[in-house]
Each structure stands twice: as C-alpha cells, then as structure tokens.
Picture 1 (cartoon, rainbow, N blue to C red):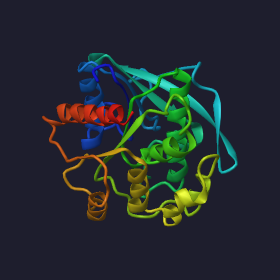
Picture 2 (cartoon, helix red, strand yellow):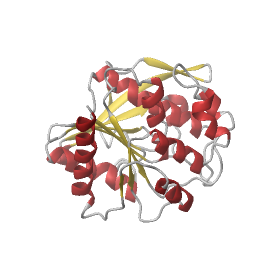
Picture 3 (cartoon, rainbow, N blue to C red):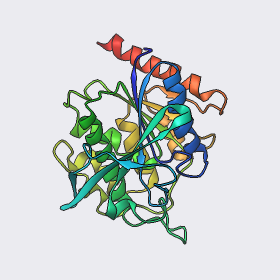
Length: 274
C-alpha cells in the first residue's frame, strides 16, 4: 500500500516541544513514512510555550474560523501551520485562546494537571477531524500518539462513522508511558455526548482516570502499538484480552520500518474484508 494516506495526530512533536520518546516519534515517524512513499498529514496542539516566530508558524485563514461547542460554550478553532524544511514535512497546529495560550503543555508550574485538560482533549480531537474534512483529504490510517488524542477513536467510530471521508479509515492507537495520576473533570463523559455518542458509549468515563480513558480508546481502535518499553500494567493485561492486532515496542532504530509494515498489514486486512 505504497500510496496510502496516513494522518498522524500527536501530543508532542520536536522541535516544537523538548525531545521526549513521544516527541521524537512524532517528528521522525511521519518523515520516515513519507520517505517510504506514503502521503502524510501531521497535527499537534498549539501549546502556548511554542515560539511562533522562531518556528515560523502562520495561520491558515481558509481552515480557521469554525466554532466548536463544548459544554454549551462556543470556542473558535484556529489552524496554524509550520514546515520542517529538512524533512519536507508540514505540521498543522490546533489553536484556541481559551485552551492553548497558556505557556505550558499539560501541567502548571507546580506540576499539577490543568483542570480543563478534558475539554482541551475534546477540542483538539474534534478540531483535527473538522480540519481534515476541510482539507478534503481522506486518510487510510489515522495514527494517534499520547492520551490527549484518545478521543479520536471514539469520534471516528461513533460521531463520524458515516462520513465518507473517514468511512474506510483504520485507527491505530499508540500507548506510551504518559500516565496522569488524578482523574479528569467529573463531567467529562457528559461533555462528550453529541449526535452519534450516547451515555452508554462513554459510561467507562464515570471515573475519568488514565486507565479508563485508555481502555475506551483501545476498544474503539482497529489496532494497537506499544510506544514505550514500559506501560501501565493493567492496560497491558487489558490488551491481552482483546482480539486486535498489536505491535510490540520497537527501539529507535527499528520502529519506522516496523510501523510501516504494520500499516500494510492493517490495510491488507481491510482489503481482505472487502
């Protein structure tokens, strides 16, 4: 499936954020997949600590201007873009003044998670899907990295399931050692309700902790990748109960080829099903 289209949705990408296991994969995986003949698009949140001038971000007016309603409040969606010249790769940024202008990523100066991280994840996931719609670009694979992307599988399987653009998209969820220690906001599951998503779909989030959020993401995904050498033990046990393709952790010098072959496997299975 050389010409397959792959959408990468990442919590972190270097050089926009410091180098971590996840941010390096967010940076080098799309480049490697593009170099293997695929078409790619890459998205991340536009956290306020990202220097727009240094990284030459600019707003894409034709993609901006939509409002997303979360908990009965309108939030304007702003789309920015930057290029990583050496990789011939563009990165799209989801921005909004309420959610992404603070000079931090997911935690405050004391290391406490922001109380609105639940809404930030909602806004980010829906912002990505609506922007890809505006691009009129139909991905074969949607690969999610980091828990802030964990709602994409839910939206794709429930709210956007009959959208021609996403109807045949396969969702892969990468699990990392990026656990948060306190549950997200109590009303999180109620904020997720919309056409196509009912209370039973998100009942696991009655307790919106990391494990339950990850379980929901995995249950709605078509395939799973272990992105860190060590992940939550309960999640690891849960994966063993699932009848889904799983790619085990691969080190830095192996993962691009391994992921590329895994994409082929997922897409070939789709063709077999058809």
